[in-house]
Amino acid sequence: MAISVKVMKRPEAGRTSYMRATLKGMSLTFKHLVRPQAATLEYPEEQPDLHPRWRGTHRMEVHADGRPKCVACGLCPTVCPANCIRLVGGEDDQGVRYPIVYEIDEFRCIFCGMCQEVCPVEAIHVGHHFENAEYERDRFVYDLDRLMDQDHSTTLLWDPSDRRSE
Amino acid sequence: MTPIEPGFWFVAAGAAKVLAVFSIVMVAVAYMTLAERRVSAFIQDRLGPNRVGRFGWLQPIADGIKNILKEETMPGTASRFYFLLGPALAIIPATATFAVIPFAAPLPTPKGAVDMVVADVPVGILYILALSSLAVYGLVLAGWASNNKYAFLGGLRASAQMISYEVALGLSLIAVLMMTGNVTLTEVVRQQQELGLWFVLPLSLAFVFFVVSAFAETNRLPFDMPEAESELITGYHTEYSAMKFSMFFIAEYAHVLTASALMATLFFGGWDVPFWKGDNMFWHDGALIRGFDEAGAPVLAAPSLWITLATLASFAAKTAFFVFLFIWVRWTLPRFRYDQVMHLGWKVMLPAALGYVVLMAGTMLVLAQLGVEFGLRYGLALTGVSGLATLAFFFFLDRDRIVGGAHAKRKFSSGRLASAAASND
Image: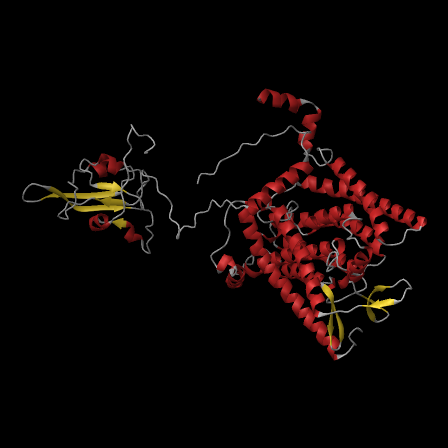
C-alpha cells in the first residue's frame, strides 16, 4: 500500500521543452486516469491492516476467574508521560493487592505504550483498536470494567532480536 | 420541408427549446462538477465521491441541497448592492451564451422544421464574444464589492486576463469568419459540411489559439489567476458562501461547457456526423436542402427524428470530449505565473494570431486568384499552409524560447546557473 516517491531529474533552464513536457504530463495523467491505482482505503467497509506493534485502545487482562491481573503496583501511573492513569490500590484479606479504582483517560493518553512495557504482570495492554468515538466527553475515561471488557488483540512488544516484528 | 411559420407554434417551439436547453445545460453543469471530481481523483490515484448514490450519481444533488441550506454570509464592510449583483452578473452571461449554438440538425414537426438552436441570431459569433467578455463584470464587481484585498486582486487579475486573451480569441475567430464569410453559427456548421473538412484542419493554428484563449477566458488552470488558491485564497469569491458561491461555480462550469460547445461548433463541425453526407441540411429560399446538383438546382433534404438524434449525439460527444480536455488539462498543468500569463497573451498570442490572420487571408486571396473552388482542394491547400504555420509556431514556442521564467533565463544567460548546477552535483 505504500506509495513510492519518484525523484525527478530537473533539466537545466534553457534546455526545458515546455511543449514536450506538457504532452508528457498529459500522457502521464491519462495513464493514471485509465488505469486507476487507487491508494484510497474504503474505510468502513475495508478495515486497515494494523501492524502487530500498532498501539491503540487499552485493554486489561483478566484471570480465569474474572479478576483483573493488575496488582496495583503503581508503575503505570508513574511511568505514564501523559499522566492519564488513575490508580487506587487496595489489599484483600489474604494480602493480595488489587486495583480499587483503575481509570485511563483516553483523551489524555498519547498511546506511547509505556504502561504495557512497564507492567510486571502483563495486565495493562495497548491494543489493535481505534474506533472509540463517543457522544460525551465523560465516556472517554475508561474504568476498570470497561478496560476488562475490551476484546481486541493486544500490541506486540518490541523485540530487539526481531526488529521488524516479522 | 418549410420552416415553422411565425405564430403560436413558433413561440411554443421557441419556449420548449429555451426550457430544454437551459435545463440540460444546468444538469450538465451539475454533472461536470462530479466528472471533475471523479476524473481528478482517478488522475491522482484516489476514488473521488462515490458514496451518495451509485458511483456518486447523486452527489451534485447533495451539493445543491447543501449550498441552498448553508448560511449566506455578508461581510460588514462589503458594498451590499454590488456584492449581490456580482454572482448574478457572472451566471447570466454564462448561461445565455449557449443560446446561439446549434446543437442538432433541424427537427421535422407537423408544423414545419424546427431549427435546433435556441436563437439563430445573425450576429452569432459577435453575440458570443460580447457575452463572454460581459462575464468578467461579475468577477470584477464581486472582487471589488467584497472589500477584501485578495478578492480585489482576483477581480483585477480576472479583468486583465480577460482583456489580454479576448484579443487573441477574437483574432483566432477572424480566420473562421474569413472561411465562412458569415458570423452565424449555423452557417459555420454548414460551411464545414460543404468543405468536407472540419475547420480544425484548414485553420489548425486558429484552433490552438482558440483553445488557449478559451482556457484563459474561462479562468481554468493553467490560467486560473483570478482564483489562484495558493496566492489569493480563492480570489474574487473569497467572501462568498452558500448559493452565491455556488452561482460563481455554476458560471465557471457553464463557461467551460459553452467554450467546449464552441470548439466543437467552430472547429469540429458542430453537429455534423463525420463521413456522412445524410445529415447535411441547410435553409435555402425557405426550403431545407441538402445541397445543389450539377445543374445548380437545390436537392431537398429529408430531415427526420433519427438524423436529429444522431447529430445531437455527435454534438454531445464532441462537446463532452472538450469538457474532458478542460478537466484533464486542469489536473495536469501547474498554474502560470502572472507575468507569464501576460507575456503569453500580449507577446506571443496576439502577434502570432495577427500574423496568422494575415497568412490565412493571403492564402485565401491566392487561392481565389488561382480560381480554386470552395471545396476539398481549397481546404487541403489551406490545411498545408496552416499546418506549416502551426509547426513553425510550436517550434518557436518550444525549448524555452518564449515562455520561460524570467529568473531562470537571466541566470542561464549569465552562465551562473550552469556553474551552480555543476557545484550542486
